[in-house]
Length: 365
Image (cartoon, rainbow, N blue to C red):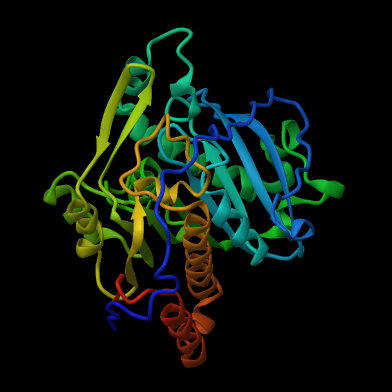
């Protein structure tokens, strides 16, 4: 079934602007072994979730991974969603939808990947350009997937994991395993994180495929070649591609140093076009550029923007993304019987029609 260009525009008077440079909301890393502390959500519904953080070390790669866990209010076996941020971003990346997913009852885990995270802005040892070159080196692609696989394993071990025993403590001494259904695991990511999602879902062969992942969302996915995009044919799970109508390249800037990365929107669409039919989705959001999908306030001094949107306009877009992606998880991670029922399908399609603007592209087949 395919839907194209649904629903009227929610706000045709959205004013455009360049986001105010308010600084990236990077958080100071914790030391290994330090007990985490609960953080309050800054949303209006603060009591609906709790947030804990810590740092764990992968025993094989020796990578120190900063972890943020969004814990839902209700303690029950629920879907777990792993979130992989984009280049230059830490655990605050995607906070808008990560909070929304947790409020809907999912346990959400954001990973700050070493070398490719906010460390690129630290030029005490090497230059900004050198940092970027290191972050784009071939090993990082596989290492990010290994980060995700390790965190999934640690979360499924629950209170027996080194992550819980050494670093991260839930509020009220709750047990992590009480919040996770091991048969309902999803993964999402933006940009570099989307490439990570593509790999862990099977694009690059069995070595990186993680069969524990049952559904995926890729914000700004992409592939530089048709041959690489064609490998998406091997993906066997529901896969939602979300991108912007101006989702092309981004210039990373620090002082006089800069580097432009990314690809044309057409190449991002290749990912969707090569996914097998049955449970693939595409949404081209308008107006939206690459950094719209950071899910946090973007520092205009560090990242270029292709469009100008008023802050309230960006927030409105995030809210629509929150609703659509939450519905995706609820539909595909709620259990096979419910997902395939006529009532569930009708409810899902109704929500799609409510959130997709008339000038946007939405396809589901």
